[in-house]
Image (tube, rainbow, N blue to C red; front, top):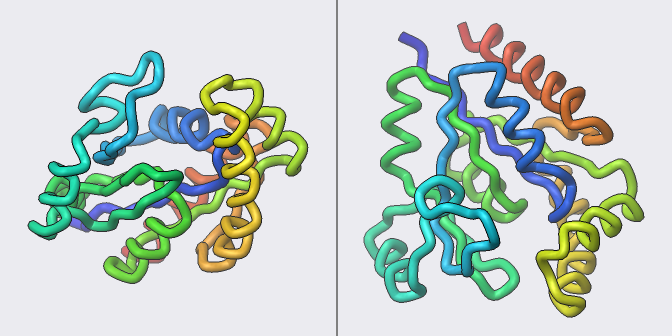
Length: 188
């Protein structure tokens, strides 16, 4: 049996990662890896489904115990991908989707060179800002930080295997599915 593919999808805040991932998951037998985070849940987020919401103390313990494939601190909150469930599903031949920031994605590639990194591009900087403002989840200070981080993310996007424009989520998802199919074809 072939091992699964570790697909990492990243992009700036507000570029539509969650929406595109939902579309991609409709098309295949994927395992969506749930990250651990120290940030507070947003409205509608469920522990264990969207994130594992943990205390800073518990997160630090997980780091000390080498329980993460990658971890990072972003906007004052910690995020990490638990290693055990990802590796178990890859061994079963399942494809894994990780939604990570650019630093986390680069760290995964360093630790797992076979990972397939896809960077989602917003249609424009203006559209990205409009999406961030429109979702009403950040205050003005947080918005400024996310917009300022955009340039760093764009620089690091050169580390990715593919860049996909997310102008229409269904089209972007279809392109990612094609990329994944091509990778599978090349690894047979």
